[in-house]
Length: 189
Image 1 (cartoon, rainbow, N blue to C red):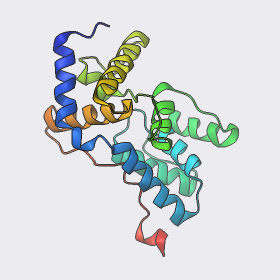
Image 2: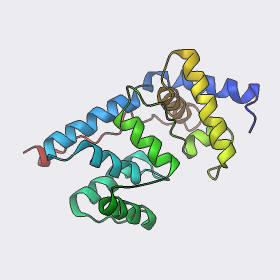
Image 3: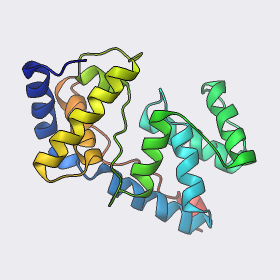
């Protein structure tokens, strides 16, 4: 995949539009930490479960699925492959998938993570469908990393800004400012 001047300009515009959301992973990490403190769960485990349920899922649904799984070990209404992956993770401590691995690293280590979470929204910002190739994935990661280096940001900050910019500009919706995994009042009691 070749990043044309038009694609580059579009991505830069989206990043500027979503710039206020660049710290999405930092805020999300803190929300997950609050949940873990209130529920006495391990932050790595919870983050990994959230990440496993993230592919092809809206953020709000991702939260519902992950909390269902953490509380009951079961989930209804999501792709069965995600439940199987979560069960496998509980049994082996392992999971896979480019998006899952990057998302987990971005949420666990937002201060240092150099990975780019490439999902369908980012792919669409680059003019690609949801079934992108390995070459397209690599091109997106390189471009986002290059933009981050020039802006003095981390790659996931640029990705978050582009992701949120796309929600604002292309979809006409306000993005969620974080993956709000805060504990409910019932859990805090």
